[in-house]
Length: 121
Image 1 (cartoon, helix red, strand yellow):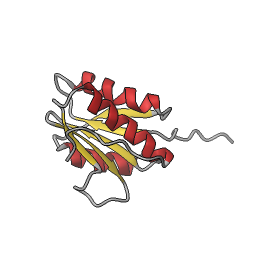
Image 2 (cartoon, one colour; image 1 turned 120 degrees about the vertical axis):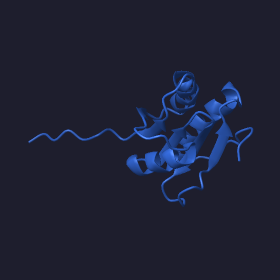
Image 3 (cartoon, rainbow, N blue to C red; image 1 turned 90 degrees about the vertical axis):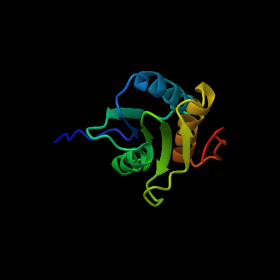
């Protein structure tokens, strides 16, 4: 008997908004550079990026999640406490820091050294 299983991916939970597609594209470029598959899902409730990232990391078999709201992009690892993402940057940081968040998500999965994201908290 064949049972279809969900493909392991980095989960991205985002709040839908005017810039959501653009932000997802730049974060996705970083994940693609690292060769890591991802799945983006619009959040049903308005939540902050750090909380979305934490929830995404717990929904991911890879234990890595990214959250995007109208102000921030956050990267979380499931083994870290809620509200303590690895990185959190402003959505106005520019294309390169957004890509770096995606790159770091991929590197976290592969257990490689992380890059410093400009403007990260």
